[in-house]
Amino acid sequence: IIDIVANLAKKHQINAAVKLQLRELETFIHPEYKGRQDIKHIKRFESAQLNFQELEKLVKAIHEHHLISIATPFDEFSVATCHTLGIQILKLASCSATDWPLMAAMAKARKPIIASTGGLNISDIDHLVSFFYKKVPALALMHCVSLYPTPNERIHMNFLGKMIRRYPYVKVGYSGHESPEKRMGVMAAVAKGAQILERHIGLPAEGIKLNSYSLDPDQADRWVSIAE
Image (tube, rainbow, N blue to C red; front, side, top):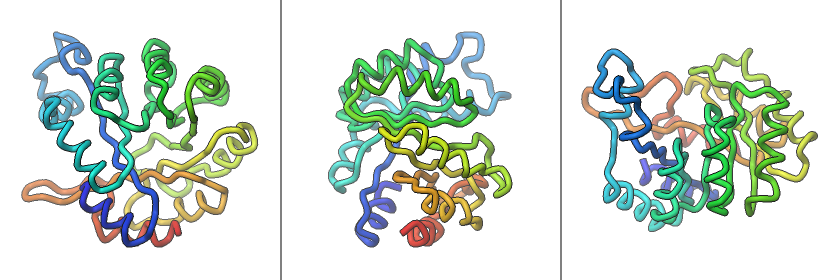
């Protein structure tokens, strides 16, 4: 996936990033839920867990390809891990946007922060911006609809324009979860003034197919072309 993004960045001459997700599963998952196979998120988190050396290898590859490294930490311990790994930008997940201990740890790290806003009301976003704005080197907001995949009629792109007007001192972007064949979202986001674009990109493997909102390499190439 890192190679795919690097090729897209080179072909289209864009600034591109790869984002990791970090969870300290020993404390993140409640002891009574560890090993549960009937809860898809528990199964996925535990089966995809990487150790520090594996994460370090990925971050090194990202930087060697002259890409930007971003990570979403879901707990305070993972914020410290991001610092040790040399992650350049921290991403606040929508579900963590009212997790004040985590947000305080992220602010203390003194790294640029991109905050996703899926499921938040305008008051939540006001509090988020007020908390981070003067504490971090740079802040950006991502319009996001937490519906996977997102149909065109639920994208609500006017809200992106509302955030641009309400927070003129931060960058505003769009994190899309539409089906791969739908490209109206990225066109509308660019037309509205989005400065950052985010999509899920995957590489099909034997016995594993991509989910309904992830782009394969060819779809990602077409998506970037439209965004240009």
